[in-house]
Length: 181
Image 1 (cartoon, helix red, strand yellow):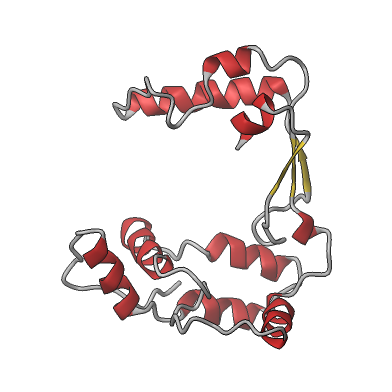
Image 2: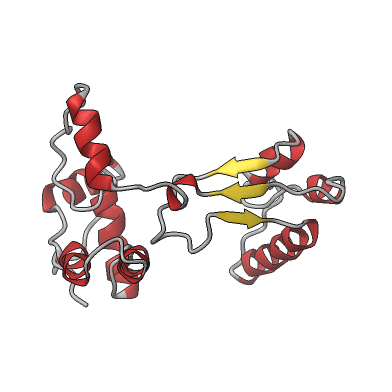
């Protein structure tokens, strides 16, 4: 996205992050930061043996070299507005939206979410939304008890199995579907 913004001289990149996901509603990028982070990421890819000749993961070096002194800013409008997930869901349901029936505690529309959460928990030992939820709790947008409930809710075994099957990936025997903190 940063590369596209630079190439198209777009002054802003807009994300739908909430206060729990981003502590700042506006992030002003600088050309020096973009160069530094690109170089750092390239070194990290090399360390793990990834040669990104096709520039699939990195901003193309010629784009960085030719960007000049203007860089886009990243905006998180949901951090500026009075945002409530419950209010958004209530509003869209009033105009006819119906939940797709996905039994996932962290997504209303993504069948891959439970599988991604399961894999993150298996790899790192904690729920991938812990940082986001902690941010919401610290900002006062979510009660602490609700935060604990959200990250300790059992993951959807049917969704995990469905995604694993579609991706032709196996699951570990013990399938820890109830993360705990």
